[in-house]
Length: 369
Image 1: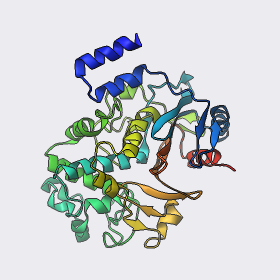
Image 2 (image 1 turned 30 degrees about the vertical axis):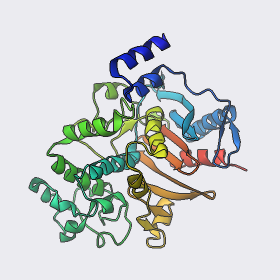
Image 3 (image 1 turned 120 degrees about the vertical axis):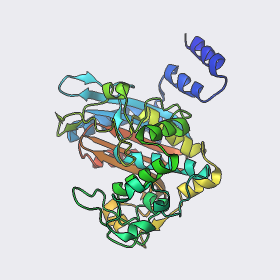
Image 4 (image 1 turned 90 degrees about the horizontal axis):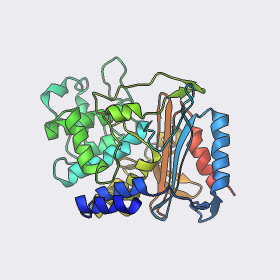
């Protein structure tokens, strides 16, 4: 049956990347008895399973979607626990999670696509692209006219994370300091919508065409459809269910709305390690320091990072330089870390609120002495 599916796929679409998705669906999950950490040391998957389950109990994490990449290949993928405690519904490979702020680097990758197509320049003030209908949302401070896509992606706009109910303020001259900002990403969204002369639906279509579909990320979306809504894990706080939030049906929120799981997300991470989908020079730009801890000490005190690139936090983790991003929405938590040189990565999504240490504890376990 597996051979038949693959032959049909090849017949219908040739050797396109959509076959990558079909093969992924019919292939068995990785079954290695051990994985390698960044030091090249073997970690038994049985012991890793045990640690994850102990941490889930200790931190009241109902469900986890987890992946490890060694040498650019997915060697470990597993789901643990339940999608919903109240009903006891089990987590499956189809269960989707809110990616929270891991949405940002994926959108940065998409922005680089736009740059390569000549549709956006990273250093042109975004106001030059902005449809006039959006201007009143940002012109409370004339310095907004200085903000560029590069500043948004490296969190140097001066915007707060979110404005709340008041006017959108700017706390420093754009480009001079670091201040983590979801509002910045939404400013960039408005500029991209203006460039493409579209709305949130068209922006989702562009993401699907340029990023998700070529990588076989079938249900990874910023704007959710009925399938995603019915396959979404339930959010939890302190081991109790929360109301499922359906806020991503009529908005493209680049800062926090991506829905995915570790299996689909791993396809994008492998693309980063393989330099797939962008030109080599664009990949180097994507991982190039834009602001460092020497210039902005808040990078270390607030984010634990040593630098920020156009889309990624840069960390020194036990002597290894890794890039990645964490994410926290109400009832969901995520983290991915990757080492470009080692072609290694760790990805985890879960449906628990503010369990900030879960992913980092896992990384620490993999690299314990």
